[in-house]
Image (spheres, one colour):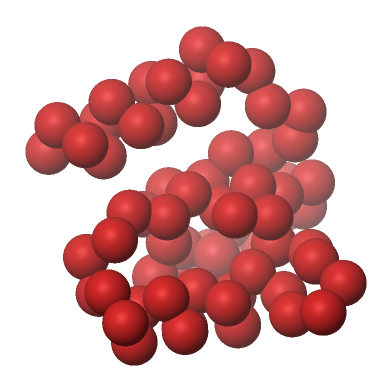
Length: 69
């Protein structure tokens, strides 16, 4: 899920998802790579994150790790 979206940011959207399905895996996608941004993302309840631009191999690795844990 993208962190920066026009109507609702990804962190706000994740709260709604977690209300419906606490265990549904969600990976944050962001252009913000500073440590404080990543800390906020992970503290918000995302399972993991990727920094833009996304490499397909990195996405696959994250999905494999989340789905097989």
